[in-house]
Structures are given as C-alpha cells and as structure tokens.
Amino acid sequence: MPRFESLLECIGNTPEVRLRNTFSEEDGLSEGTRLYIKCERFNPGGSIKDRIGLQMIEDAEASGELVPGVSEIVEVTSGNMGIGLAIAAAFKGYPCTFIIPGYYSRERWTTMAAYGAGVEITPPELGVPGALDRLALFRRERPNAWFANQFDNPANPKAHSDGTAEEVVRDFPEGIDYLIAGAGTGGHLSALARKLKKVWPALKVYYALPSVSRFYESFLPTAAAGAAGGGGEGGEKDEEEEEEERGMRLIDVDLTVPSGEHRLHTLQGLNPGPFRPLNMEFENLDAFVYVTQEEAYEYARRATRRDGLFCGASTGAVLAAVAKVLPEIPAGSTVLAFNYDLGDRYLSVPDLFTDENVRILKSIEDPILPPPNRHQPKVIIGRPSQVPNDAVRPRKSENEADH
Ligand SMILES: Cc1ncc(COP(=O)(O)O)c(C=O)c1O
Image (tube, rainbow, N blue to C red; front, side, top):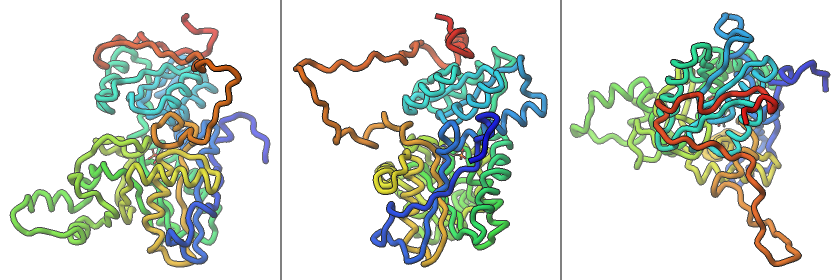
C-alpha cells in the first residue's frame, strides 16, 4: 500500500472484487461467467460520492465560484453526497450545510453532523421539492453559499469519466461484457456507459431502478411521441411492441404503476424524482431493469451473508438486477456491478437487516434502558421556505459549538 499525504489522496482507486457466493447456478449463473463488483465503500467517507465531492469543490475553486475563507457550501443530499463534500470541506476549511428530506436513514444525517456540518431535515411528506424550497431560501439569505448541485454539475460525471471509468479500463484489460448499475444523479452511470462503450463497443449497460419509479420512461426518445399520438384510441399494444417503440428494453416492469409516474420508494440513493437531473443520460443504456424493495433487500442480505459484503439497499437493487438478467448472460462473460456504500448506513431501515439472532443476557431482572441519545436534533415547526435559516448553523468543530 502506498503512503498518502492526506485523506483526499485516498479517494478513488476502489477495488473490483469478485462475488463468488452471492449467485449460484440456481440463479442462472453460467459456467465461467465472472461477476465483479466495484466497491465504492472503500472510499474514505464510505461511498461513491467522495469522488465527486472532491471534484466539484476543486473545479469550483478553479473557476473562482468557491473562495477559501469566504464561501460556504450548501447541498441537497440523501446523505452520502453530504459526507463526500464534508470530507474535502473539512480538509479545506469550508463550513457546510446539508439539506436532507426526512425519509432518509438516521445514520446519514448523524454522520454528516459528526463532520461538523449543519444539517437541515425537511418534512418527508414534502419530498425533494420541500428540500429545494429550503435551499432557495438558504441561497437568498446567504449570498456566500455555493450550491454544489450534484444533479447538474458537470464535475460529477467528469470525476467518473476521469477516475472510475479509467480504473475499470485499467483493471479489466480483457474487457467487460456487462455493466449493471443504478442512478441517483446519473453521474457514474452516464459517464461509465459513455466512456466504456467507446472502449468496448459490444458492452451492454443495464440500469437498475425502483419498480415504483417509471418516471424516466417519459424521456425515452419515442415514448413521448407514442403517448402524444396514441392516447388510448384503439390500437392495444403489448409490452414488447411498446418497448420496441421506445428503443429500450424494460425488464420486469410493474404495469400497475403508470408509465411516467414516480412514487416514493425506499431504495435510498436511487432515482430521487420526479425530475430528470442534467447528469442523467439515456443514450448509452440497453435496458431498464426494475427492482422491488423486497428484491433489493434480499440481495443486500445475500451479499452480506454469503460474500461478506455488508451493503445497503441500492447495492442490493443492483444485485437484484444482476439476478434478473443472469439467465440471459452467455457463459464466460465478465459482469461488473456497483457497490455504493456501507451497510452500516442502513441499520435503522425497517425490514432490511434484523436483530433476530441477538440475545441479551441479563443478570438482574429490570428493563434495559436505551443509551442516552447524543443526537437529539432541534425540532422547528414551520414551512421549509419560511423558517429562518439561522435556526441551524454550520460549525467547524466542537469547540466552536454554540451551546
Ligand atoms: C446510495 C447511493 N449513492 C450514490 C449512488 C450513485 O448515484 P449517482 O452517481 O447516480 O449519483 C447510488 C446509485 O445508484 C446510490 O445508491
């Protein structure tokens, strides 16, 4: 292992690890097919977002948008992006505030707060739009706030094109046949699909997404034309005809969810919807593989218990998508999937991991008291766009805490 001069140098260069036990012949795994997973959990902040946190900050410094000693950083995040930004920001001395919709796991916001960031949790029922309302107020009132904007910032796919994709090309001199991955902003999927297809034109790229989010179908080239022209006047089409029209295979689509609709789901980090980030491209994708919560959770548990890869719901979703296409993958293929972050970040998620194997042995019969909660957030009642933003202040270290 080389020596590093700062933690920032440890970002990227993550290992691709072969999963030997998660799938078996029963799952359709053919002789000689090798499944690797790129383990982004090995980044210092435990997720794929460390890469773009550093890249976005350095590009903004280079363009003069972010000025040391003057600017502060604000971002809307499901958690990992905040942690990724917080690492580079801690090193470089920028205060940060992260706005997170209230349905993401507690581990995410407690970790961001541990890095010294201000965290604002917006009402879950208002979704991402509620967080964006809050962001708008924040930016109006704090003119030195730089909005990282992972969804639209070109530094996001750049980090993956220059880093993640180059590592794959370097580590697989024999090439890969299938890339199977998910998307939040679309940054890594779009960049890898674009770059790797140039290197390996026969590569197939499959996109794993939540079965309750069919929102992106409306952006596929001919779907809009089909919807505008058809509109229910006769001409019943079957699934295959519809797919052909769209130019996209839809695998395991849930027809009870209308095409174009986005519903809230539990696969944290995947399809935030209902909006299309600029960093989400569809041109180089070969299929959408729809995955339910149950399937994603099942494969997260399998990877954890069979290969020792402790991972969360989005990695589970990617592995569930692998399971769906394995039977059609020719023998001897090389498949690359993605692991996004650490399973520890999902311990509070209901129904994912269980405590059923835990036994508590007590010497006396009295109730076990829960440990005191160190993470008691301030609760502020009001609309996200109206609560004054100095209700929560970013701080750099414990010593500067205002209580
Ligand atoms: C938890 C988590 N973080 C990050 C990502 C990567 O998202 P993107 O590169 O699309 O922003 C995913 C992806 O699918 C994810 O599940």
